[in-house]
Amino acid sequence: MPLVARTWKQASTGKAIDAELIKVEDGKVHLKLADGRTGLVEVLSLSLEDQEFLASVEKDGATAGSGQWPAFRGPKGDGISSDTNLLKEWPEGGPKQLWVYDQAGMGYSGFSIVDGKLYTMGTRGDDVTIMAVDVATGKEAWAKAVSKDDQKGYAAGWGHGPRSTPTYSDGHLYAIDPKGGVFCLDAATGKEVWKKHLVDDFKGQMGGWGFSESPLIDGDKLVLAPGGKDAGIVALDKKTGSTIWSASELQPGKAEYATIIPTEINGTRQYIKLFESQLAAVSAEDGKLLWSSKWEGKTAVIPTPIVSGNEIYISSGYGVGCKLVRIGSDNTPTDVWVNTVMKNHHGGVIKVGDHLYGFSDGGGLICQDWKTGEMVWNEKTQFFSKGSVHVADGHLYTLNEGDGTLSLVEVSPTEFKQKGQFKLDPQSPNRNPQGKVWTHPLVLGGKLYLRDQEFLVAYDVSAQ
Image 1 (cartoon, rainbow, N blue to C red):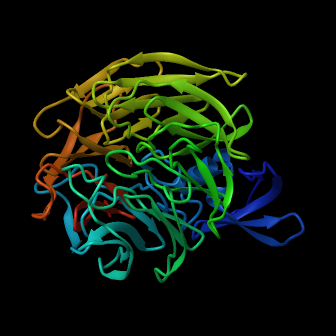
Image 2 (cartoon, rainbow, N blue to C red; image 1 turned 135 degrees about the horizontal axis):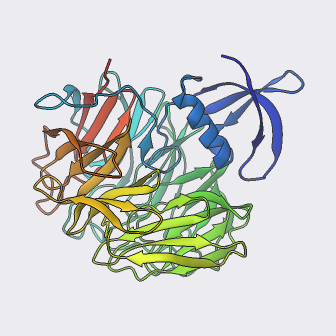
């Protein structure tokens, strides 16, 4: 491919270098420096602008090997797959099933996929277990028991097991168990490198459904939200687990369940986290509180915030609703609008263009205008009552939590257009009767991945 010259910026330090893009492989950018040397830089350590550029290059087919999914909701935290050339309609009965892996254990952990290996978590017996599965065959590569699951203090009648998705970075996996154990493993072997505990080491405060956020890796930092009264967010050295800083100005109480999002606003790298009573941002450099916006969450706030420029969208269930916050040039947050059009419980919301897509309690599948907050359309028939969403190749993959029906819906800001539907099979006979099919769908490499507890199923959705 022709070399692409540009100025690249390191997210954590702001340091800029001029170099030519050679390729992206194994989560790293290969760059040709001005003196002719070749340098390797981790994709996730670059600025968001650089990451977006790489995503656009990948979409155009100019690089190979960068179609990875290293974390919950993907490399940009937006829930949108870079896959193209997928089926635009499904045959009756759905796409072809490729394989079933039946040892994922109990729990709701999602998937990270890097270099042909899928990583997830589950409770096997009474062991919280992290595992690697070959995406080509569905065969287990390795499994590592990291802690005991006593099912106490967090299961709350809805089923036990991990809720968090492991994060891949630089040959390592980072994972959180329901009670606050934090683990770094070698991704090739599953060998433990180091471990910490959000309660024991950081005086964190678990919510009623356990620790559920997925770890954020930003450059050399592992960023987590233990909650509590000492430091709502902490940054650790991802290689050693040692503390880099603690956000002591942030004392939110319960950790809650939303995953932290990195961004840059007003020239400052920052980490944004939704707690029950506030949406807050701390400096990536030192953990200082940059701004906070009041939020009257109830019971549990779960969906990951969505960031676009200097605007942040949040939503919560239990009748609370949603709002759009704008951060001014002086770091003052202002509510652009607040309403109850989207009351998203935990299935996630995705922004495509100027519209948002997700399930709203009582409203079914919703299309919402980003700028005004108004509802454009909704669908709340039998298979669109409540669930999770994912986007790939211009289509929504919507999973109905009640019966495991997966629907293909065109991403459209004008009307609801269904293009196919089938039911996940097999489903777990061991799931808690109050639990649902809550693991979010994922499309990558032409495959659709679904999970219900111990069953992880892959389907062929490629148009080739």
